[in-house]
Image 1: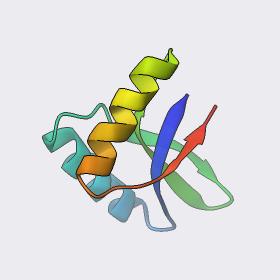
Image 2 (image 1 turned 180 degrees about the vertical axis):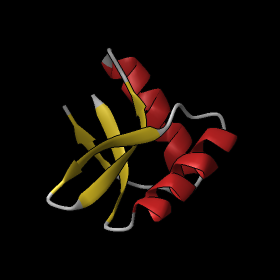
Image 3 (image 1 turned 90 degrees about the horizontal axis):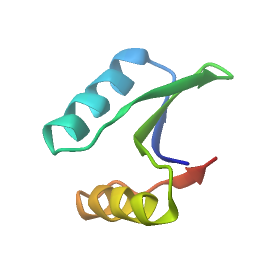
Length: 69
């Protein structure tokens, strides 16, 4: 599971968000490029518990998003 917190047409904007999230301790990365949008995940989780931890940390930084399996 991934917690997607941003979608950007401009890759540099996605890279900037990844850098901000990483600076705050998240294992962020660009998940993929779908329909011209670079989707940024705050982190990947293998369990619902770890997903909730990633979500809580990202939400606490003001980054809301959605779950992508």
